[in-house]
Image (cartoon, rainbow, N blue to C red; front, side, top):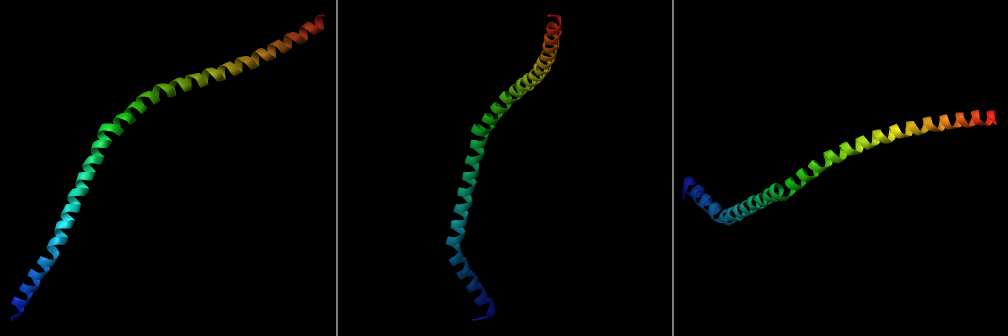
Length: 97
């Protein structure tokens, strides 16, 4: 048997032995692609709309919170001023009486 014939026979044996492995790899690849497609569908149809809804509700709530925080700070300043004025008036009334 010549060297070329040996190489050809070896190549055919390798092809025969590797054929089931190549089929399994092809099936795994198809299954993986199918899984990725399902994941993409879930992302697109379920998760993205939910995230969009959360974002739509978050911004107005954040603005309301920011406004309420500013109002609270303003009320604190007003209360401190009222405390000082009431204390001063109390001192003046004590001096008068």
